[in-house]
Each structure stands twice: as structure tokens, then as C-alpha cells.
Length: 359
Length: 269
Image 1 (cartoon, rainbow over the protein chains, first blue to last red):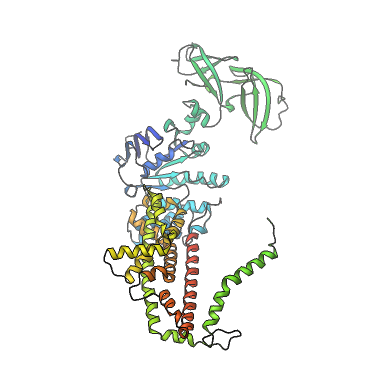
Image 2 (image 1 turned 90 degrees about the vertical axis):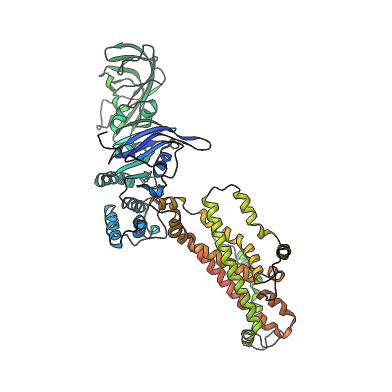
């Protein structure tokens, strides 16, 4: 963080409901003009956290600050944040113009000012000309953009988005993801985005907080989260990976030698403060594996299956321990040297591609 | 599922319609019949019963009384019903199901018993029987209708709309005024019309709590023993019936229109 105040700060936030704890002592700092995502499976606490920032839930414990000011006791209508709801929540009895103008009318701005700002907001989401239509006459994508305009027209300090792209089809979702990212860069407002779709989070975010069962597991930029997950959960939630169980056999300089159960030894670059004999989980991404003996770490196995996924080929290799490793290689056209199912193959990777977790 | 409805079904439907509406058609014929006794074929058609009806002072007063009672009790029932429905759907109040159970009791209790109970209540409080006491009784029996109609609408009401309004800076009362009420307006009107019809048609309570100025149904029944006044009364009954039917049709179309303002689940696109 630079010397600027964080846009939003959560300090030891906990939320208990009658029967369970949705959010369990989380602390986060979200920066100015940052596209920040909270990512996790259903029930991990991400939406509850978002709603606490908006003011629709009150934290059981902890402090929430907006640009340095404590806000957790302020009712939602007094907070300088705006939210885009999952099902858009447009006012069905008002047309698009009045929907977008709602927040400005509450503030009693002049008609001129309202007309100007609504026009700009609609222009920004490319809905200019639709202002007389009622929500029921709009498509899902259009309704979503009205919801966006309605929130942004108030120039909030922070924009909260609760899985806004969930109801859209695949193609439109991908377009809207890029659109949202572009918009955020244009308006330079902090976006806090909640989603369960890891690909979506990776595409749009400057930083992502991965959550599980009310706790924050890791907060990092997409690249770091992918290359250096800090736990088994994060490694498997973001992208796909191969897991192997093993024990630390020896330490040689800044590399660890790991004995994989029944497969042999492999090398990893890792914190060297792991004792010999420590049980570890090894994680290697499928695209870091290759069907060759080129790299220092290798395992021998049999080719079980080959799956063609368009731009990639997935090889499933049966290892002596009984586990299956997934190797992903680019589809480079018809390779005459492709192994056949049942062939003995070697899978290899570099020590730097090895992640280790102690659980 | 069979594609063509059986012709027997259609026949059944016709028979049902005839059975339901034949008495009403006969009533209408009676009201334009030239003569006091009804004969078939009819002797002649006349509109003078309707004219006589309009000149009958007592009858017009009874009509006025019914209107006063119906207007006041329907207004009270629909407003209290709306307030209760909003409170029940919005806040997680304890004793919610008990409240609803008690609120719909008037639909189950025979009006005869309710009438006696209210009579005892009013006399023990030294309240004279009058149009006011009738209006109170009608408010009680119309309230469940208003409550149920509004609760049905509110069940479909997107709960996030209220949150969205507050998120945009509106207090709860601003939201009520500018968002919730306009969306509910057609439904409240529908509830009001139903309550009006319930009150206007009501006989038992109106007769028990009658304090000397009768409502229309009470007046009509009282006139039944005067054979020469009979056709006038029938003419009036036809007018009331047509009015009630129109109000109910209007109420239903408003209710459906109000329900339509709820946005359907979003189609991708």
C-alpha cells in the first residue's frame, strides 16, 4: 500500500447467524481504484461480507472503514457505496431513465443536472436511447447495464457487485467481463466483485481474496495465486492441478528432495525450513508437466487415456501408486510421435514448477 | 395430454353456465316485465319499474346508507390489510402465523354468530346500533380478503428492490412512498373493490346491527312482503348485481395487471 488510505478496510470482521458463523475473523485492505474480487464456493461468506460493506448485514464483531471512516454502524442509505444486485432489482414501475435517476432524485438534484448525469451514465454502459423503456422490455444483458448505470451515476466511493453476470449466457458473460474491466479503468472507482467463477475472477481482478468457510485463505494478484497457491484448497480451486503425497527426504541448498510414496524422488524449490520426514502435499499444474524425460523431476507410468479439448490435449497417465496424473500439452496439429494408449510413458517437470503444502 | 377437448366437456360447461346464470336472466326478465305477476310468454316489456325505483325515497336512502358503509369499511379494511401484509412480509415478527390464523377467522365464523357477538359487545359498551356499528362489522369481515390479496402479491415482490432503494440513498419511508406503494397500488385497489363488494352485498350483520337506517339488502328483504313493490325491488337487485359484477371484474383485471409488474426471471441475452 502506498501512503494513500485504503478504500475499504475490514478489521477482524465476524458474522454469526443463529445456526452458523458465516464470516470468521477476516481482515482485508482494498486499495483505491482497485478491481478486487472475493472468490469462493457457495456459503464461503463472500456475499455476507459484501452485504456488510453495503450495510445490509451488521457485523457481530469488528470494524469496517471506508476511506478511513468507520461505517459499520451507518445504515445503508447513508453510506457512500452502491451495489449492483445479482438479479438487478430494477424498479419495475419506472422506466430506465427514472431507474437510473433514482439516487439523484433522492439527493434532490436539479432536473438539468439529473438529465445530464443520467445521459452520461447511459452513454457509459451503451444504453443511450433506451431511456423510455420499462425494465420488462429489456433483455437480461440490458437490465444488467441499467443496474450498473443506476449505481455508478451516484459516483460512489466504492462499487459493490454481487455475482452480476450469473444470469447471462457464456458468450455475453465473457464480453461483459471485459466490458466491466474497461469501465472500472475508465471511472477509476474501486470495484469489489463477488463470484464463484475462478476464471471470471482471474480475468478481471487486480487482486483476489480466496475464501472458504468464512475465512480468507489467500489474497494476491491472479498470477501469484495461480503460480504460488498457499494451500491445497487454493491450488485446486484456482485452475486444476495434480496432487501427490510425499515426505521430505533431504535438504540440499535451496532445494528439497521429496520422496513420493512409491514413485521415487523429486525436487522442489521451497522454503527450506521443513524438517526431514515432514509429510507434504506436492502440487503440479497439468501444463507444467510434459510427456518426456527432459526435466529433472520424472515419474514413469502408463498412458491411460487421451482427451482432445480443442486447443489442448489432455493425457491421463496411470502411475505405479495407482494415482492418475493429468498432463496438458498444446495441440500442435497431427504429431506422428504421439504415444498410444497403453504405452509406457515418462512425465517430467522442473523443480520450480513444484508447489508444496503442509496441511 | 389430449389435444382436443371432448365435446362432452363442452356440453358440461354449457349446462353449468345455464344453471348458474338462468336465475339471473329470469330476474332480469322479471324486472322489465309489464305486470306484477310473471307469466310466460311475457305480456310486455317495460322500463317503468326502473323509473319507479329511482323515485322511491326510502329505497334511495337505503342505497345511500349502503354506499356510506361500503365506502368506509372497504377503505379501512384495505388500508389495515395493506399495512398488516407489508409488516408480515417484511419483518420476521414472532407470532406471525398466529396473527394470520386469527386474521382469517372472520371467513370461517358464521355471520349469525359474529352478529350476535358484536351485538353483545356494542350493547355492553353502551354503543348504539347505527351505520357506524355496521361499518365496523364489515371492516372485520372484509379485512381477511384484503390481507390475503395483498400477501399473495407481496410473496412475489422482489425483496431486493427495497434494499436497492436504500442502497441508492432512500430512507424506508421514501422507499415506501416512491417504490413500494406505486407497485402495490393496483393490488390495493383490487383489495378495496373486493372489500366494497363484500360490504355492499352483506345482509346478516347489517340486519343485526341495524339502528333504524337500513342498508340496501336489509331494505330489499323488508320489501318482499309488498307484492306491488316487488318488481321495483327486482329492478334494483339487477342494478346492484351488474354493478357488483363490474366491480369484481375491474378488481380482477387490476390484480392481474399489478402482478404483471413483477419482473420475470431474466432470460439470457
